[in-house]
Image 1: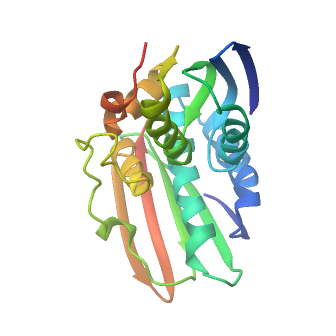
Image 2: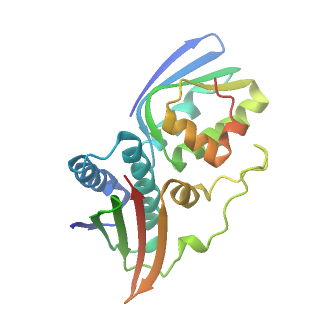
Amino acid sequence: MKEITVDAQIENLEIVTDFVEEFLDSQGCPMKVKIQINIALDEIFSNISYYAYQDGVGKATLKLEIQNKPKAVCITFLDAGVPYNPLAKADPDITLSVEERKIGGLGIYMVKKNMDEVNYVYSEGKNILSLKKYI
Amino acid sequence: MTINKKQEGTKLEILLEGRLDTTTSPMLEEELKQSIGGITELIFDFEKLEYISSAGLRILLAQQKIMNKQGSMVVKNVNEVIDEVFEVTGFSDILTII
């Protein structure tokens, strides 16, 4: 299991992206899955950076693991920010016309669509969001 | 991400190279703000674009709304992943993808 903790600031997205990509490459992850995981990472890390600690600064931790049989990448995000379950948000209405579409709400929707499993718990003062993608 | 522009009269073509994500979107947003005045035909060439996250989608949506009043907008040469993102989010119905 690999783990990284950074300040939850958007400037650190590149560091966590490199960390995740290195791990995925070492596991022979196919390019398309790598891109999908990158997108999920962008969405979730951005949300933590912008919203979890409101005006303060806090930490975000990422844990990476490989599960076998069937082979999957498991990514867990932990933060000690405001309790927030992103999965409780209703999906955006993707059938609306361009004028009616709202700018926002797409991030977590894309994560749910791209990952095979997404779970959330709030435990011991931490938001814990787990993603699983079969590779 | 690199942004390359080609302008001919009121036609503007923007080629993106790299990733359109949370950290690079502000760059595109700024570029569009500066260049979009008077443009009646806007073309995005995504041949060298690896992926797009929701930050990028937001910019495309905002730009599509502007171009609907000002002229036309198309997105071309999308790769498989970006194509799927557009499908899943319903953006394939909003954007003109060629």
